[in-house]
Image (cartoon, rainbow, N blue to C red; front, side):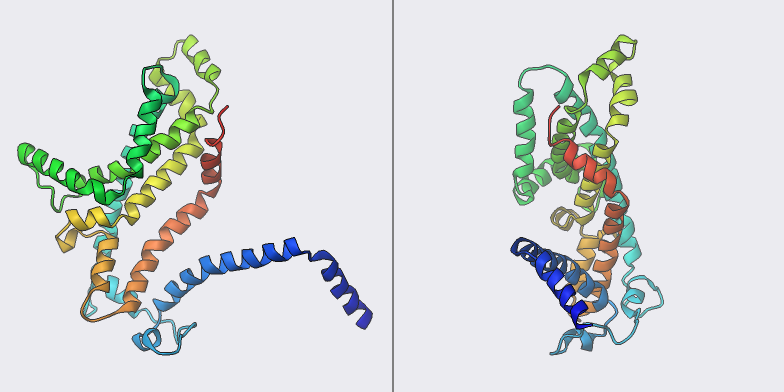
Length: 299
């Protein structure tokens, strides 16, 4: 038994090198830094206020309590938050933002990648430069511009989810254009030229040839733009005043700043907001990996 133990220890000692040891330490630290905050958020949603606010940290809840989730979704609960309406509002702005951004990015990216016109590289770099500006610098001129348009056309910019979708495009469209342009450049031009020779129009080439070859990039851009709109806080805070129109980030901030602190409810709402994005990433991981890496190398 001792010889077997020594052999095992000797085998491990021979296998472990400084490089592997440092890699294991960094990997464990990295995984712990990602998974533990998520575990703490989920577990805290089942804790009582005493367990969350106590001097000693409680790593495992005392029971599987659903009080925080009942407060968010149960109309019979005393402090009902109607969080389902906030989830619906978030979907109403996130899904259209992703769809519109992808459609516009397909047309704009294809033009930059395939068509010849003066200043297209300057245009692409300018689009990316707009994305680098913080949203707080754009929100005041954007709000003033939309307010003037609203006065002339006859719509209110406040508490208008359609206007909020338009503001989100200012953040999502530049990066969508940049990502798709790089991907379209990796598709051999000869394939599209053959389709044009066979009698296809330019739009038919995009629909029948380019888009089927670009599914990984389209999925990546869709998820990325959806995620930006799903998590966006600043623009929604400025443009939404009606509690019935709040998106999830604004509602969570409202619950957090309530005079009666309820951290378990905040954690429950944050869990509901986080899990769909994680499921989406895991379900489409294959397309994400292909879409984000294929556009990095031209040709």
